[in-house]
Length: 585
Image 1 (cartoon, rainbow, N blue to C red):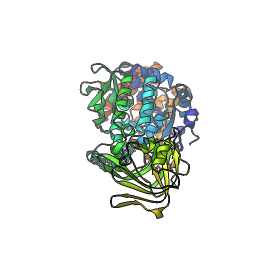
Image 2: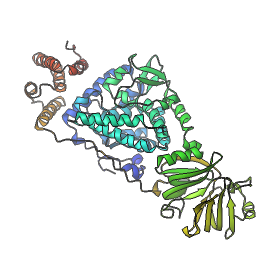
Image 3: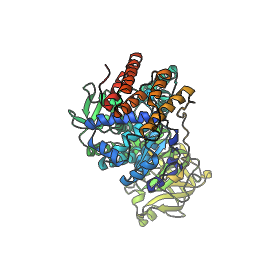
Image 4: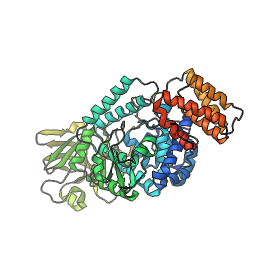
């Protein structure tokens, strides 16, 4: 874990595979322009959000220690967040959805530490510290919402993805990076947008992860609360976007009551949302989450659960009715009358009970896969797991006995029993054989020369979910993103502009009162005539100091900027509106 943030007892509980995503915040890398962007967005948003955000937002800003004046430092945030049972870590942009949600399950807020460029001050598709710090952090101060977020992470990280989901994640990550990167080529952006669009249109049947990601988007990111007629904002994407927070309050955005149907409504991160969902209160979010969880393989198990894991082609787990958990990459399932009767994994597989690996049954023991029958013995009403010691003996399921077990559906296991393992309730969960042959009709599933055959015991698959049962069973330190956030070398002109911003910031904060703001304005007009944010900051200082002549010069310059760059007009007007003056006509 990086030493660039202050750890606490919450962060210390993070598993190693999540720590690989954490990066140093590198606070010194924020320029004075970055600080000015934060200050502008926060002042404008807070001014507007006083009227339209859920009351928890403004209360949360105070509780989480997020300042309007400066980009939050992880040190300070963690010291305050721990008082409400949370912590924060810095990451590089988008991380895989399962990992993002697992962080939430540990009460850890993931914060993309980069900040949007001045050119994208109203909205960026890339997660940034304005979105995370100013959007997510304040609202978690509400206990009901914080528990929803934690529970969402807990359930969401178990959602099974499809192979296409990860491809889409990489494409979206790349698109967000190139759109935010300075001097990005328009053709590269168009190409990245087309790839995302093509993938979205050819995803096939949506996976559990795709569906629960939709719920996350329409609540955590873009949620409204209250009534459809008079909603308030609580979603982080709206709380952190100057443009969309105002846009979403207009009649141009359709408002719908929030229900489970939102899981089937896709979204486009590159465009403003045409409709939003309104929850009556935070408790309702948890009700819908539980309703969705009841549809997941996590709770349904069965043949459909195994099929989802096979489609995912990724590490997953099934849990049997005895509590035995099998973790690996599932590649085949044999079915009979709509039920799974034999499952098979490929490659390294581990067995566990209650999320703890069974001694002697890790990936080294089962390095070439694992297969086992599921269900009851043919013609016997009582399942093996429900048999008493006397029942087991009666059916020759006993140490050193040669036995042939024929299961419903035709799976046959023949061999000499070596031993069995039981769970805490005394139910047998695993039987080991030597000289064992396993067949299904004419198919040979296991040969004696392959060694010991470990047969899982369970009449049903009660759960199937993404990831391993025991996090320590597998090497999960494998995340290598295909793209990194792009940071280009700053030009001499850009560095000069940053120096001017720093001088004004130093003046405002009392660090250096000898700076001539008139000279700063002159240099701006001469060398950076299209910059609009620093003149707004200069005007604020001039107005506070009742410097009428300097104020008029700045307003005249801003009128020129508006004529040359009409797209900056509303930003300038909004900035002056925050200061408390007339808009430029």
